[in-house]
Length: 188
Length: 380
Image (cartoon, rainbow over all chains, first blue to last red; front, side, top):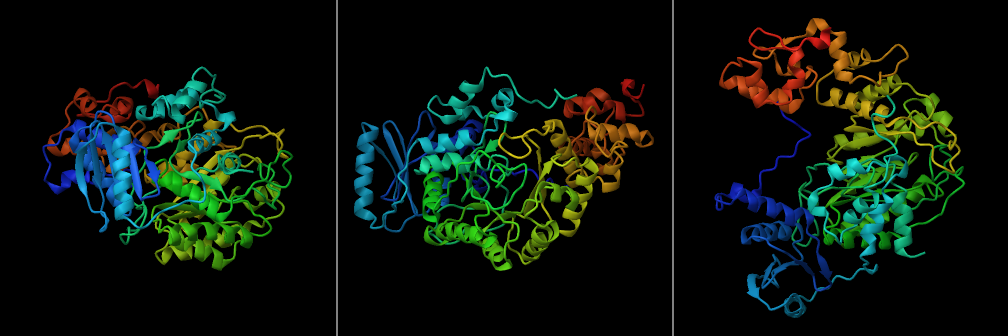
């Protein structure tokens, strides 16, 4: 008897269903997921989301661009991986999908912001000025001291989060030698 | 007070609230939107207590008129730093995190400042800015305040993918011991039934949830199971969260005894047996001891199998999916794999079974494989 499993998410990448890139390797799927789920953007008021990548395949970048263009259709999405700048957008006034070479990240960003300013009239300004501390503060605030269990955190935390600059890495390092306050077994 | 300090206080104010993003049937509309409601978002990260983080969980304000004895926001709590987000400030803070791909949705709750209507109004203003000004179409989980007006509930449900209203205790007696300013039937259960009516009209596509504090007023596990039966049957709830009582400094119950996490974990196991393993409430009640508590030294499913030895062992080649699900050691995936395996050919040996379904190693004492039963020590 077949049964549905309502707690499971079906993980068939959209790109596979289209049939155009059936030969894509498993590693590309993993890298595609890495960009989509772990890559963080810099936001610019010219409706631009920019991120720098390291060691990604062209296929995974294309997959991620398609994903983010669907998620943020009002923004221009850009990935820089030396020496290439990859951009995509579904906006009618700034409709480009290109890869172009730049000597550095700064030059690529300068060119792209200028292009966006010229093409897009709209700007998105927030009343709250962004600080890199926001996410780290929020992440740390969620921890319940009485339930400390660093081994569980280490086991569950995806490795891609453990970049040395991230709040997740700092949290794992801070608590790694701590003795667990509570475990499931200690009460039996 | 700046935004960072507020975030530290009001983000920390939600750390006892359990929630996870859920799939929603809502579709992304229009080209000028920000975000999409589909599930593939940011990967979950985990705090040092093992809690997953992928939503921005935050309170609108932590000022509260209620006197819940376990709660750090209650009027009876000695240590309290009050803070409140302005609706525009919170909406902008969330959008900053969302477009940078730090979070994949919002969980918004609030203390009851002045009245439930006032709290709902502030929350509504925040979500209206998000949904209307920014055309944000991502996931949103909103908490309904006890005693909220039906119009406020309708307005919040219109914007939300999921709403929740915390029950806090499994029955009126325990609830009255924990809080004197709220009425269990009028402020909580009646509101839950209103939310259920809204859900049946097609809103709140990710369903309704609730949360209960475990053991704060000496409740038994039987109380929780009876309440779950009512919640899933009469109120159409999607999920119940449990939070083992922690004696937090400064609260009126600071000298109380904290409840073992294992009890919370076992209640979650029971919840899964009911929702996914097709156990009936009577079967689950049979797992309880004479004092109405689950024995904490044995897994509930194993306890069920040992109490009902006449049902085991089951034949892997003949058993139905539901019968396989009752075998300790076999889960939904394992049971399905056995069905897939025997569709191809009859399973002839335990080795053949455990190579294809590794989790079946633990289930072998409860299985007949080709007329043979192995590893009978568990029945000794």
